[in-house]
Length: 176
Image 1 (cartoon, rainbow, N blue to C red):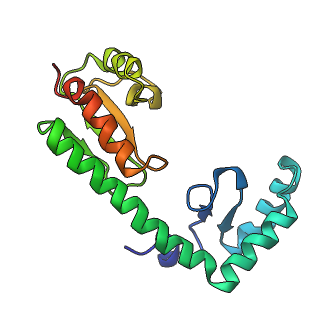
Image 2 (image 1 turned 135 degrees about the vertical axis):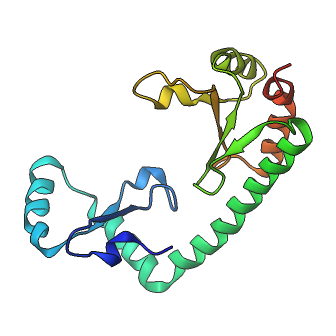
Image 3 (image 1 turned 180 degrees about the horizontal axis):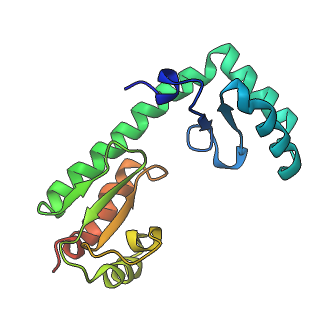
């Protein structure tokens, strides 16, 4: 699917970052905005931001110009796809009834626990087993009237660790 900005470049701002694709600490991003907003946004950035590191910007520009950034992205897509596949396989093996959503959205999936309660208990039990899970309730501004949900991150966890973690908490995800 194409970017919305391409359909209405005079009305839509497109923003991006390398925080997920390269390094979170790099803190570099960009904006593609309508020409009418460019001066206002530039002034706002100058007044509210202490600036982005020039050397980091030059290094990123060189990565992009040389094609190495594209090669890195292709390699990482393969890596993340393997991690996502490991997560799906581990869930199928250890918690086959668990409903999972959000797999196409990035480096996390959401496991639906079925009932409105139990999120914090499952998180605490998982942490006691050295598995870090996070509840979706922490991502909401107000309590949800829907089922409890867990965030399953796989972006910075290797395939073996994903499989081992799901095996360790499979009974919790099954509600046992």
